[in-house]
Image (tube, rainbow, N blue to C red):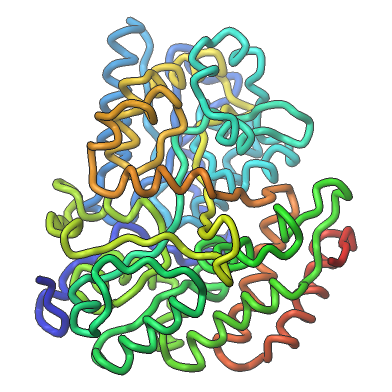
Amino acid sequence: MPVRPTAARSRSSARLTAFVALAAVTPLVLTACQGGSGADPDTLKVSFKQSTDNSVKVMDTYLADIKEQFEKANPGKKVELVPIKAPDAEYYTKLQQMLRSPRTAPDLVYEDTFLINSDITSGYLKPLDPYLAKWKDWDRFIDTAKAAARGEDGKTYGVPDGTDTRGLWFSKDVFAEAGLPADWQPRTWDDVLDAARTIKKEVPDVIPLNVYTGKPVGEAATMQTFEMLLYGTGDGGSDPLYDRAAKKWITAGKGFRDSLAFVETVYREKLGPDVSDALDPNVGTRVRGEWLPQGRLGIALDGSWLPQDWLEGSGHEWPEWSEELGLAAMPTQHGQAPGRVSMSGGWTWSIPAKAANPDLAFEFIKTLQTRANAQKWYVANSGIAVRQDVADDPAYAEAQPGIRFFTDLVEHTHYRPAYPAYPKVSTAIQEAMEGVTTGDLSVEEAARGYDDALKDATDNQVTGK
């Protein structure tokens, strides 16, 4: 049973989420990745996001194994791993700086689908279609994952290495103290809020509910909270943010306002963390590393990847997590069909347009994405399979508690309209959320502010619903 207010609070998390400006790109990082015409044709430079927590080496360990496999299978070729140790926002900034020049561009990069279309539009990435046409394993990848790496020109710019889904994690210990069921499965937003209110009343020394909010946590606020709400309202059809037929962004409608009202309720009624904690860039660190493992949080709206922080060898082992935490799907607003909602993102391996050794880079992708290596990565990273043959393998579904639950949510998942303007649209959403979280803005004021920011972010390519 987890302990709340004791010295057990020593767990820390694997990643930071603070925003760091472009000025944080240091000469050391840029000069570490020399490429271009003077590059060694036998050396492949692979750049990836390294955890900011020194004890978490999931990606490092995996890539070291792939490097060994690749060099053994390709005598005379060498792989140079070029980690970027940074929080998400800083990683994006550093990576884009590197991609601008043949002198600094690596041969292979780890791209978040959140920004891939922006990088495509900027001319930073190379289309992979000629390679994919000759790679039989490409047919094994599910269509939705392929679409996440496809540009508006119809070409594909990355090979996905997995996806993710989101749902509700809850502490069975806290629920038992609050008199709530261990098999809790809410049907509506009100059910979620009512459970949080019960926890606040019956177990006052814990945080009832965490939903990420505001600019400091960036895309976690947009995707893990706001879009999980908005896409469950039914407002705007299949995509309440972007009208794909009209190719226009959608201004704030009723569903948008209702989603803001949910966030406002959480923080106005003090059902969430203190506002100062909620707006701390490191709040995700605390959710994974302290609040959930120590039984200090009742419900967390969060992602499928959390267990990677708790596995053996992670530095933050919590072998009891599958017994002490329950899982529930996020319900739609009023329980309307299909009754549950999730959002999916993920990462891809992409080849920079200015890479010195693109052919060698794709050979490395093929090694990364053999069936055996892909399955190893999905399990180690607590990811969701994007190769259908792996998803259908019982060994994958049974490899870790929670995999089947989060994989089943793919049926009800949505993907962000990750067009070039999306990062600015996401920031506008975060600003609206922050306004209602702090109480500085009413829902109506925040929605109007969003509409104004949306017009600026999209050159007035907007429509209403």
